[in-house]
Length: 287
Image 1: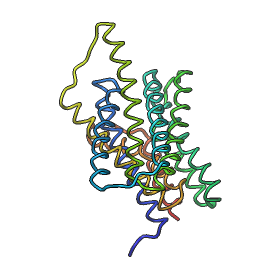
Image 2: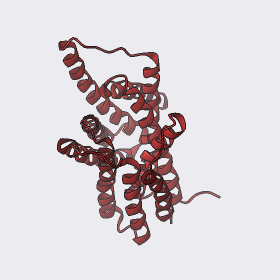
Image 3: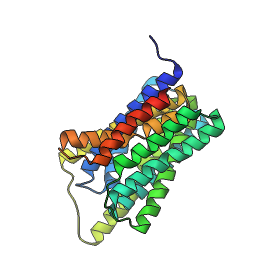
Image 4: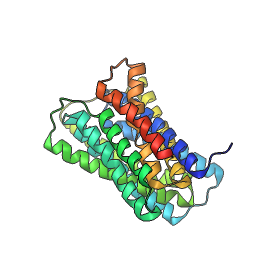
């Protein structure tokens, strides 16, 4: 039996969260060996090449809105990544990630409320439960927040929220070109930041190697991230923007499950509770 539009949005949003979580897991492992800016440049540069080949092969029509809003969404996403990575480097990773994750959902929910109307009490309850789930999954008790790190986390969350809204607008006239222009901007942001990091290390006499395993992880991060963007755009087109954004933002759960499965990391009670709440949130939002 075919899914209705709302059901498609839920399924696509959950798929986006799973794929985005895989991208963060791969990118996080790569960032342990080389600066995050280089991971972003490698990952997004590879996915940009793949997207360019796809749009040229399909002879996709290009519209001005796709260029403008695609570039803006890529810029917002690139700035958000730099802010998030900078915040994480200051310590208090759990609190930083939790604050960023929750704030990411705020902008799309507000825009969708204005654009699509009141979501209904059950869905609103689902959004609130999802926000709590994201917080519990990402937050590590005992973290000592750094004031500047918290400010950067707020900036990152707002940038990611704006990125989700702009991606939806860019995708209205075609998904592939929208994805491509998003990648153009984020690759440029990563490359500029990477050059600044490289220049700083060169002046200090330092350097780093890029082993094949890191390149593979960066490539996987780029492919997964692009697929996540694709599934999110399709979810936002199929249904409400807030439903697509909130469900897609459950990606920390996928990252955590991969860490447990592949790295044998242990979960805390709060993280386990967050996963249960995430399932409850999906049920409420899907109604």
